[in-house]
Amino acid sequence: MHIITCLGGGLGNQLFQYAAGRSLAARTGARLMMDGSRIQAPGGYRYVLGNFAIDAELVFGREHGAAADSIRTKAEDRLEFPIFREHSFNYDPRFETLLAPKILVGFWQSEKYFRAVAETIRSEFQLIDEARGENARWLGEVKRVTAVCVHVRRCDYVTTASAKTHGPCSMSYYSSAMEHIRRMVRQPRFFVFSDDLDWVRENFVAPDTVVVDANSPEAADQELRLMSACRHHIIANSSLSWWGAWLGEHESQIVIAPEPWFITGRPTPDLLPDRWLSLPRG
Image 1: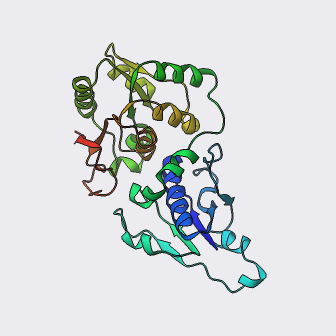
Image 2 (image 1 turned 180 degrees about the vertical axis):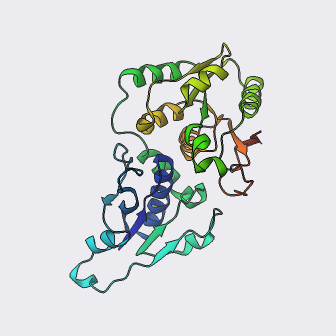
């Protein structure tokens, strides 16, 4: 039997989709496959999980069809793969009763979908390759101090349709979150990660703050490694940001997230773990 999870979006979204599929496969004793049909179109998103230690086979083809066809045997010629589709942004408890075979279509942005296999997910979301060059240098800096990851997402949140749904977090949000960390943590060092380096260089100028410029947007996996190596996290309303904090979790970690997640005020009751803090996004 197999579980097929359909990939879509960038790195953060693909991590959520894999994690949900991995959780369901583990519970049902099934084999996990990833259907990349939705990310193979020219000019769209691309597959970005190849450098992680994941345990699944990737198949490209017509949506849902190629993956299902590729795993049919003669004894399964008439097997149908039912689709379980995400109906809202909230956690769906029906997920706990699903059986294999199944095709998962959605984003599954809650740790509730994979909390039972959290340690497996943390292990498999480690990069296979060692950090090199500037990434190795920055990784050494992060590990040398009490590092706080500050993630600022702007480019597509300002210039595309995402501006109407997500929108960037305000500078007041980041200032409030950094002041909270300074009150709670002795000698923090803030490492600012962003897709808009010019903007953050102009706005994050405190002496305890540095801007990380090791990677282009195409190297999100390398950026994620640096982000998750930090001790504490101030995240943006971004799935990549979410994973940087979640993968970097330890006993004394402080995570601050923006509220609401969407500029429209759409509720997201299951997105943030209860142990994380929230501040107004401004």
